[in-house]
Amino acid sequence: MNTPNKLTILRVLMIPAFIAAILLLPYPWAPLIGAAVYALASATDAIDGHLARKNNEVTDFGKFLDPLADKMLVITALVLLQHVGMIHPVFTLIIIARELMVTSVRLIAASSAGKVIAAGWMGKAKTVTQMIATLLLMVEPVIVRWIGWDSALLRTFNYSPLGTVTLWAAVVLTIVSGVQYLVQNWEFIDYRK
Image (tube, rainbow, N blue to C red):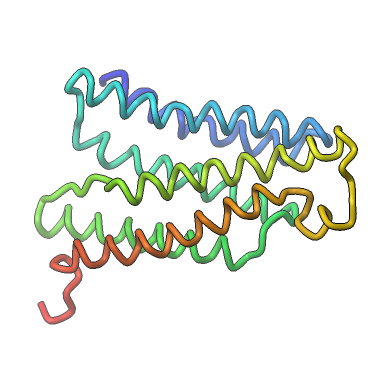
């Protein structure tokens, strides 16, 4: 197994540590340590992709597991942030629905045509934006309280105005990239076949 694939597997294995940090540690350590674990796991995404391309180690296993690991990490973060009241369930539902749709199309393409569909640039931009949004939603409230900006206005944004705006951007990219993915891969799901 090559190094990029090992890093992708490491990302998946870091998810339980992230969950434990968010759910078991006291405030403010829960969001800070959870964000550190999440940031480290997210960084493996950029590193494994860079190494795979640089060393010509792109594999079908990596094309399959890398986007799946991203989805698992981001969905875990969204569900946990929803659990602690930081995001509205509709955001989580939109993102999860898109990820399930993409994964289903990938499975159909692999089983019916033997084709492994790699992530496109729009999907990668969506993933990066989701990761940034979830990180901001975890750490921004802690920073805002530490520097004393605890105000009624910030409370309306759950103390995370930057995280909220970035999450909106992530949801827009989620919808646009989902539609683009369907259009580009319609041959695999055409109901007339």
